[in-house]
Image 1 (cartoon, rainbow, N blue to C red):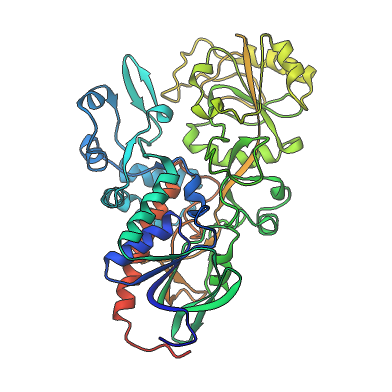
Image 2: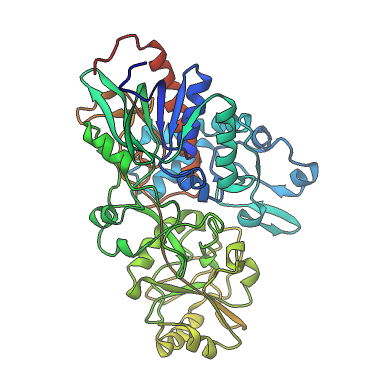
Length: 505
């Protein structure tokens, strides 16, 4: 080994979240020696993946496909549940719809078509899955019905995903270095040949035949958020890790990678107003508040500002964080009455929640911090009169129960707010990840500004641009990281093993 390098390896992975570890495991099973660099400590490893609820969107054509992923479904569950189907065509159509037809069709097709195979592959790595009864299904006539194209989540959520992937990596002989911040990608005319990094503050180099970047977006970088997303984004809470500061994107751009995707767009949701600045692994995604379709959201004037019933929560939650940030004071109150309180998701029941409760709507108006009570009460009266009560309420479908005559309509799931006690939850914007990044091809190779692959450089995960614009279908992030991580690892390993030329440094 050269004295100039701390280690030499075939594949060097930057980032130990879902995408990075899928890449590492894929490279290892394809015969490569692999090292993973993690900027965080072992305790905080896993990037945004560790904070995720573990929802996975994938294509399946009925119970036979689901049994490949969840083979331990009981006969009772199968009989008493309508899981529906979710074809590759539906997956692609959802990506097209929520991104306003801007999604990269090559990437979208790969994601949809490889999603089921990747879920089966993850199960082979000891990841276990269960139906999402608590969040994605309602009981109708004694039978659970799933909605929105989602049916399955990871047992134990994102934290268990990361724990299991790392366990598999250690068992497979993959070395993981913590407190190891990559600072630049080593390259010359022959391509990429390693990484310069700091380990515990000491600058060292590692040599490799290929590099896979999987270090996330720039959502935890306040300066980059404000520069690219725009005014007030420095005021948003960060839902996940504090370590995703855009390092991998910057390093790739520095050696000629093509910037790609929606650089002024991001995944942002309604997040508890008093949540900490960054994510809390002990709480996970519990600060989110996603039952707004069954109530209303009002801003400081006491008025609604968004159509809460525009579509299923799966297709709106990731864009409403931006709308909340645009309101006076960057907050909103979610309002529910007793007709729908039983439909609230489990995150509304955690102890760390900004909540008020009142027996009457007049009492509630006085308890809502920073809200104009008179404007609020006037609006509630106007809203209640606009609800189309003749249309049946049905939370399983887009029921068409809307409002008439309001400046901001509610398209589905409209109910009068008139049955106390009332509950209200204060939310602000919580940013999850950014949509802009680098461009990759079907092999997960990073493309340069001349539309050519950068020899030896691959990417996967949130720093890949082009999949998501404006909005996002729930559960797509983890599966995208797994699909393209697996592809990156396989191709990086094949390239490394056949790379015979010596890169001169």
